[in-house]
Amino acid sequence: MAGKMLSIGECMVELMQAEGGMLRKGYAGDSFNTAYYARLFLPADWTVDYFTAVGTDIVSQELLTFIESTGVGTSHIRKIEGRMPGLYMIHLKDGERSFSYWRSASAAKLLADDPDRLRAAIEAVNVVFFSGITLAILSPQAAETLLAELRRAKAGGRNVVFDPNIRPRLWDDAARMRATIEAGARSATMVMPSYDDEATHFGDASVEATIERYRSLGAENVVVKDGANGVALSFAGDERVHVPASQVSAVVDTTSAGDSFNGSFLARLASGDSPAAAAAFAARVAAAVIGHHGALIGRDKLPAGSAQFA
Image 1 (cartoon, rainbow, N blue to C red):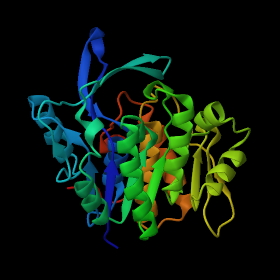
Image 2 (cartoon, rainbow, N blue to C red):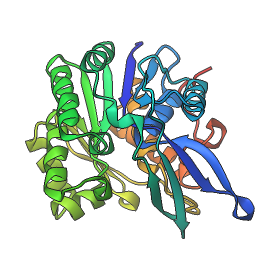
Image 3 (cartoon, rainbow, N blue to C red):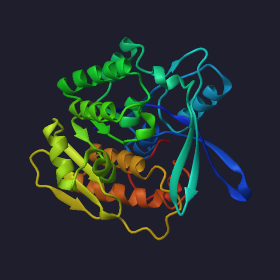
Image 4 (cartoon, rainbow, N blue to C red):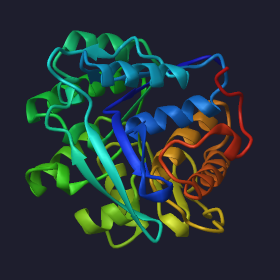
């Protein structure tokens, strides 16, 4: 059945390692990466749109052109004079990544400053995705504006999906970070955390503890990503299920492992797969993604799935 998905957050200019010590430019960001992989694996009668803000500069126009080239819609993206996209650089060591960021003038920090535009975009779709990074880049007031609209969407029967994606460097206060992440979970119907983040920042002693905590905050469905240990699924009315991770021959770059899982999982779930089948497919996608450099991997390097954007 046809549907509409909206992903809310920040897409940045990405600089990644290339041969000969050179850098290659791309565009990525957790919420856009999720939209990208969802678009690849959703049926053609679904639409995927991105909600953010950009500037009016050349780089912003290049970013919009790129987003459109992936089949993700840009009609909800606001243009703000005097702002521009953020930029980050990936540093790799043994396949693990760290980042340097330049985002002080990022237009995306103002994405919730037009509440009417935000509400109209959310009301037009079936599925809304956002992340802890989406919340982290906003002022406390703007984050509350976004969360209020998401709570409204949840109450109205929309599927609101939240990946806590905890990045402490983006927050000015650890207590506010935890409180805002919990508020994000209360606004969602589905939460998709990574267990290592939850253990580090919330003290969860087990995957089960993470599931119970997010269920207690009001999430009907919880999908806990636990790296090489696989994925734990807790869906309302179903028994809890463990799905093993897919085997990886060589880890090249773990950038977007969780994002690619999120997008492909949501796509397969929307296409009618059971949660376990959707998770098994998404695990194969994530395994393929971490075998290549960069956040966004071409369709030809990924497992066969549903019809892609044409």
